[in-house]
Image (cartoon, rainbow, N blue to C red; front, side, top):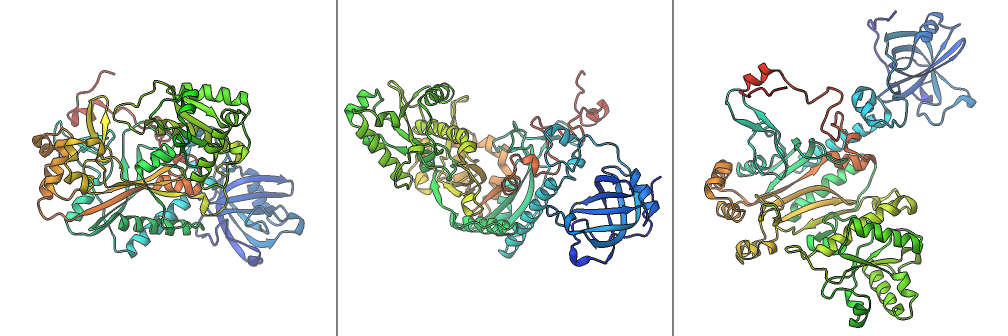
Length: 610
């Protein structure tokens, strides 16, 4: 029979008591984590969010409490009243924060029972993620999940406190708004009172935060929910949280300084340190050195070594003239065998780079004809990577264009991108075996980077037109605008856009915005949008630009992704309380689900045939 709590109150949490509390009479409440029956003694490990405390039910001391402990099972909710006592020297548990003490219970209440759970929250690892998500309320009882959510809370609080001290206002923006182009599909919400009209859930508060700058509020931020109907993966969710901010009259440096400041504060609250200011790199530099616009600086950069090849060597090795030759330093500390290299090259060639050939520098070094070339490649790559020399275990793979290979139109950096994909695949292969990313417990674990000067436009192969690479409210470089490149050479136009990258992950993205209506209209026209279409889609915003809009800019950082990195998790689902699966399903509440024909009719939507 279950008990009522009555007027009893919890005096301590299950992670609070220590040896200094010996002799105190306490009341603990929580879940039975484990139960061990030793006949006249029953041991219950009682758990709450804060930790675990061992409770001892002695049949001689409390026959009634002992009888109830016999009924208790894992995940029963209990209340234990008793005295704190020190454990014997041979019974101390050094793995538990409360391991020096136990509670000699005088009373035990069974406040609720529990079915046998599909898994135990006492388990450290549970393989079946779908079961965890279906029974998320059980999964969240696990210490690891509570720890992750604690990190999330502390980080969000640190960000808020820092931005408040810098003069930012936290302002909420609407969830029900209009559909605007943000690069992904919108979630649409039908309006009951306006037939055939829809709200859109915001992919970001982009236009609203710009309106707040037009309104003269100077500094805005929001830890805000955003929604994107896009294909999912481990670091993507349909609803996510971002740290969003906007400032008037900023230079890029001002935004970088604010972001670096609140990140430093966020890391400090969990006992970590990062070095500021963060290094910077243009988009072109990132592609040429790393083959990707979100470089992982923990790995050595690539090196263009074409300059060390003679014409005879190019001809002898059958390398296409006029294109880069890229050297990649292997991240491992041991060389691959020739058999491994050959199999690896064939596999990657087919998967990643059919237009590329691979040169093994070790084999070149063993050839009388090309030994001098191998030395020149080694020396050039070592210098570029900041190394004294390339160690034998870090020998190079050189990626070169095959004879007849040509650069795709409108992609002059294609070979670097291909080589960069190979570089990341190499890193993946060698990471576990050779510790390329071993945690050192210092700032080297967190390699931040600002990437700047992104292309303003990108070519859409499907529509055969230029489209915006960031979003259409990003300001182009003033020099490119004055030179008329928007029309004459769209590919060369640079955006005042920037990304913050951490360990190869894009953490945030932002830009200096367009603040003049004539420039905004020029951008829309360059994107193939007529004045009428622009007015229909953005009329309210174009009108607002006419009323003294100040220069402004901002950024949005993914809170979920930041916490995922700080928690050492591999998926966003580990740091979000109620996430969706890779198919955008909430297994716990079974959403999405069909709705009744009556509901659809009320929304002026014709019911489908089911």
